[in-house]
Amino acid sequence: SAPYLAREQNLSVIDAVSDTLSKAGYDKPGTPNVMIQSSDSSVLLKFKEKTKYELVYSIPEIVSDVVDSALSDIKTFAHSVVVARDSVYPKNALFFVTGSTKTVSKFNSYNLSVYVQTFNNEYVSQAWDFFSDATVQINTFV
Image: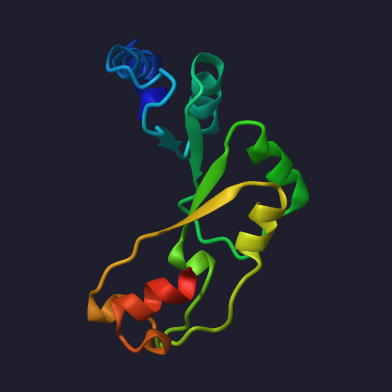
């Protein structure tokens, strides 16, 4: 809620996070990779101005295709994206996979890494095609 806090409460979450990571030494060479995730492009643009961390754009909606103009726009403020499982392997009401989308290959064509969320091992959350096995589900996505 960084935009809300900046607008309504006059608090800069971006400055607070950047300063804290810097004080912890995460801006020094040889430190672990830091990834900043947001579904708000303006937040990622501010981080891009201030830091060198990997910026991850979270797309909460299910997407089955992405137009080139959107990919070009995302590339200006993010290094990678996070999409929902159903954006890669959509399923029908009977929990069967209806095919695979071109979402990952489209993002990859613009050198944007893709992370898929959320995996869990609950029986009703997996398509039947994965045999209700969390390992099969993850291996299929990989």
